Image (cartoon, each protein chain N blue to C red):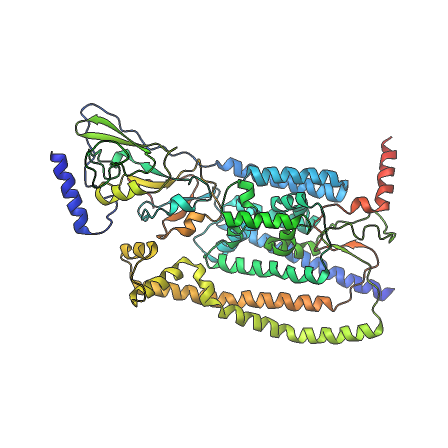
Length: 431
Length: 188
């Protein structure tokens, strides 16, 4: 009965304190007379670090092999096999996390948040594909990235996307990258991970909306080659630019282009560029004027974009939980809403100062205002540079794979008659 | 011809310097990462002292059955006869049974140890992380029942869906070599 009295006092005490008092030891742990041993709670261990290191080694090996297969072996079949392996290993076995695309945000967060430290494996996952791209082109996209792999495998009936649509839609990826960096830098959210369309497929479970998004993208991907990689992937944007500078590049033909046009339609990603005819004097004159105009409006676009990006700060800042909480508390304080939410109740239970919360929220809003200039300015810059790029004539005498857009999948190899000559010769040498 | 060569050379030079700059840039990112790197992975865990038992853990996890489960730390449990984490507050008799128990899945077993003590054990295969027992135990008991991310189940998403939905900021990244934040143990 003593025990019962204790319980009553316990309840009474709890009611008096009228709040949640955590782990107050109201009842002393018992001394067992029967010698009963208290069990200890089980703590199942997480995936061991050694597996993370193995993942990095597999990534390194897959990148090396992909580069060899694309540039030296020139075998679509082998590239395809590696694609399937990457899908199984990085996609279904590792369940898609952490990937280089999402790793971008971890790196950004670690730069802006002094307290966040990137695990070395995440840093390796982010950096290795970039370094390989600087040397060998986008071989990561070709056969290592699981997101690319799953789309590559469903591509059955490729249709050509008009180049204006291609260029226009690609701007999405730049904006997505800018937004991802902004949200990661302010510590608000990892939007690349949240809206990763294929993660639910790799895990065979997940959010229904994301599952539908992924299924839709795969459905589109049957006809439009790799829609995520070309129009959305924010990491692809970085890879594009580094690939322009790569030491080695994917070549359609092993030696000289004979301009037979057989490869013209072979690329499902619209990455094969035709030889450029020299512009007529009239065209040249128009282009020159256009170029001058675009060069003039470039700073205007950057400023306009920056201003627009910055003026979105009040909306964008709501991605941060502190801002959402502060707005809720403000509504409650001013009496506009009467009931509390879980978050506002939890905040009030901590007994922290409301003014402090408001100050935190407004400093986060200011960060969004400042970051918004860079985000919008970046978007304006990308649009401006794209316009400038359209009015510049680039010398091209042969059919060649565009360094930036080429995903190094190797589909065009077998379309080239010179490639067949090479293969014949290789066979002869062997026999 | 000579002029052509010159433009090509200029372009090559520009490309090469950009290439070098990119490599140096990547090196700098690597350096910055290495300067304050962690050898161990970071994983998600709940700070039990911040958790408000809001039930989001049960519903927001990307897994069909949440990776968050209830943990019983026996060392701080009072072994109460009337366990406020086990029985409904208005339970008429202190007997097991759905009408008396808080746990919607019957995941807690109550075993008699000695008068007047009972031991409460969580069957993790049944626990859904709804935190009903946690709430009861925290309000009227010792708070020995609390939620933890179970790392045999957690996929360690780069952005944890529960962490994003957590109203009290109780989800944090912890180093993988100290994967649990158990009450009664000293931790930062």
